[in-house]
Structure formats: C-alpha cells, structure tokens
Length: 279
Image (cartoon, rainbow, N blue to C red; front, side, top):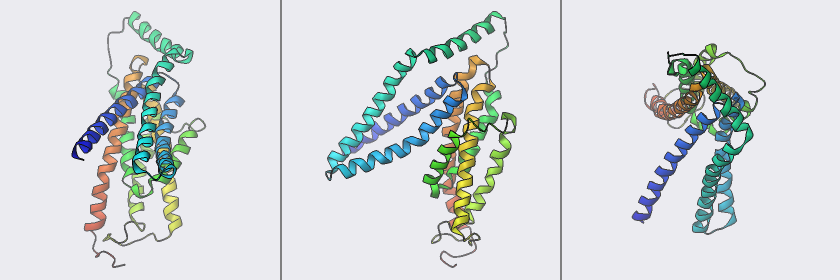
C-alpha cells in the first residue's frame, strides 16, 4: 500500500507540473492570435472542472467495482492528456496558425531592419494587468463556499466578452480593486454559522445569492479582460512572453486566494466578540 501511495503521489506531482507547463505554454502560444482565443482558453479552464466531475459521476454509476471505476477514470484522464499532446501537432499544420505566426515573425523582422536597439522586457507594460489577475482571484477565491455558482457565472461572462470590451486597459485596475468590497459583504452573511464569532448582519439568502452572482460576474469578466489585454500591450515580439507571464500571475492569484482563505476563516472563527453559536 505504501509503495502504491508513493507512486501515486509522484505521478500526481509530475502530472500537475506537466499540466502547468502545458497550460502556460498554451497561453503564450495563443497570445499571437486575436484576444477571443485567449478567452477561449479561459472558458476551457473553467469548463474542465465540470467535465471532470461528470466523468467521475459516470465512472461511479457505471460500475460498483471501485477498482474498475478508478481504472476508467484514470484511463479517461490519459486519453485527455494524449489529446492535448496531439493537438499541438495538429495546430502547427493549420493555415490559421501559420498565418498569425507569420505575421508575428514579420513584425519581429521589421523591427530588426528598422535598427531599433532599445529593447523593453515587456514586464512594465503588462504589470497592471498582472496585478489585476492577483487581486481578482485573491478577492474571489477566498469566498470559496460558492465555487460552483461562481464557476458557472464566470464561464458565461467570458462568453460575453466579444460584446462588451470595457473598461480600457489603463482603467481596468479600478473595478478590480473595488471588488474587494465583496469580502466584508460575504463575511456579513450567514457564513460558517456554527464556528463564527462575529454577528450576522445579512440574513436573507436571496441577498447572499445576489452577492455571489455579482461577484462571479465581475471576476469572470474582468479576469478575462486582464488576460486578453496583456499580450496586446507589448510589442509583437514580446506578446508570447506577455501571455505566459500573465498566466503565471493567474496561478499566483489562485494560490494567494486559496491561502487568504485560511486568514479569513481565522478572522471569522477567532477574532470576534461572540462565542460560537451565540446568535
């Protein structure tokens, strides 16, 4: 059993590391495409959680044998990995990919021929968008009691990006920072009623649902804007790197949001003036 556990943990670490490299590289790859293709990657990332849950349910319902269910579950995962690996080779053969890759190459060549010697690393140009990603996910993921609803609304709002494209990049930080107001609003609801040491100021469930919908709507929309604006804020030769850096900050924002959850729970459970279940 111990050997199986060790092998499983090692495989999980390797698989997640490979997934991170693949996903980050994919953001860099589509950075040379129109912005809606970056948005498509974000939608796929949201959708994958639902797909995994559906596969899990199907494998459990299809058989009562736990070993068989586990086999089919990991077999589906292996097929998904192979499909992702093969898609890269298919993409390189598409005329669409060749066209935009050629455009990016021509812009780089023109820059070299023009004699421009002053190089910019591209980080300063996308710094605002990268910070927006950190703030966005830190604000949203610490309120983790409504993740499924948030996932659905984020995915829908990303689908609507092609219709609404406001605010402009330089003003994006304003609504992102304003979203911090959702943290005290969520904590004012009936959150962790058995452990909390603070009073409950918002008792209506419908108000709570409205807050979750609004927060999810804002997160899905503004995080998509940040991801799609970043590669277009730098020179064409730096767009790929900009896309990868922004994807890195996306993951960093997810980590910050997850870790911040523990601080929020500690605040709710330990720092209030009341004893648990006093209200």
